[in-house]
Image (cartoon, rainbow, N blue to C red; front, side):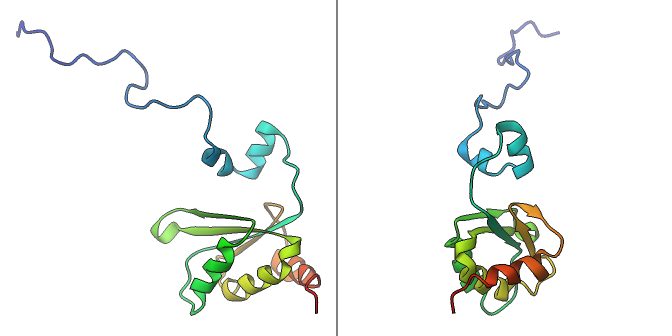
Length: 137
């Protein structure tokens, strides 16, 4: 048995290798599920929104689609590699940009349309064409 004292003595804490802040950061709050955010902090007052969530696609205008999405009211990238998703939130006043983005990425079955952050039945077939009536001619 060795009589030398140990050179390293671990700290007697439950989580010794991470110093976590007590309050969540702004990025963590922004990435919360909308239902969870509403349950924790209450509803956020904001206008009606349409969100298009899409994966990387092999289409000719995909760079233009990303440019349109980045100009949206709120843009977020999540995941890595095969699980990467792009999320672009638009207000109803952005009807022309919603249409332009959806014409590029809407053909993919993995593209989702959310109305006020919720998947609504017939969002692609009913809600989007109704919003396109807002485009001035």
